[in-house]
Length: 331
Image (cartoon, rainbow, N blue to C red; front, side):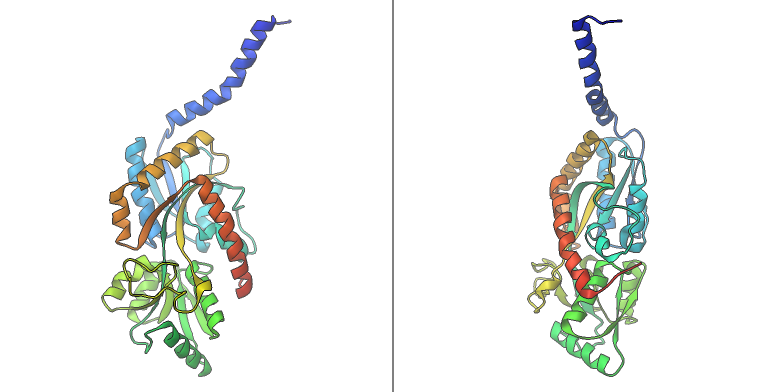
């Protein structure tokens, strides 16, 4: 049967409008049920877990559905990222992770269970924090130079220092390994399953030195249970303005800033990812939220989706060179 031309055009235009209408409807009805935010670390393990919970609470109020945090630690963020990569791309499963999952892990791990570029839609960078090089007060060390001299002497006596990290391939591991290679001393890596037990053992003197997220150690440094030697970021920490940056201490190549990002599975409808981006950026604009985390050396530093992807791509190239220099690879 041959349709009249005008009717054919009306039907064709109507069909073309259906996908756009469906996308609009999906954004207007999202979220349709509770949203799960998978955090790739243990509860309270780092500032980014606390940021995830604060943002989840505010998104719940704004979008009238619960945003529920579920912690899935392991393999320097790979376990949580894999779970999100394999979930339905409908906006009801999201990921909060450190940028290192996408900038360090691709070079460090011989095989990843996800494709960092193809399996995710990056929504926003939410916050940044520094790492602090700390020592136990029992060590006769008051500067980076003192630490290098002490570690060098210990290695010469066949008693190399042990340094902890939150796990193989975590920023604390890479930073310390890069540092010891640049400074020329031997050390033994002691990986932990997250930061809380690591910090407990540092304070107890079970381990003596390490790069640790500043938010987890700043109070111990203030109260004398640990001694801070340097901050990993380019600028000094407002919570420790007298402490040198690692660049000021003579190691500019060790500058490092951890950032917390929000991502969704690739294939999420653009209307939903755009909605999430807008809502998250509005939540992060809250002066109350910014002040709350500033007191923990976690800076709310919002970046939109395009800026987030650009930064990840640029940082991945930088870390590929660092990982190659250290010779580290994880199966």
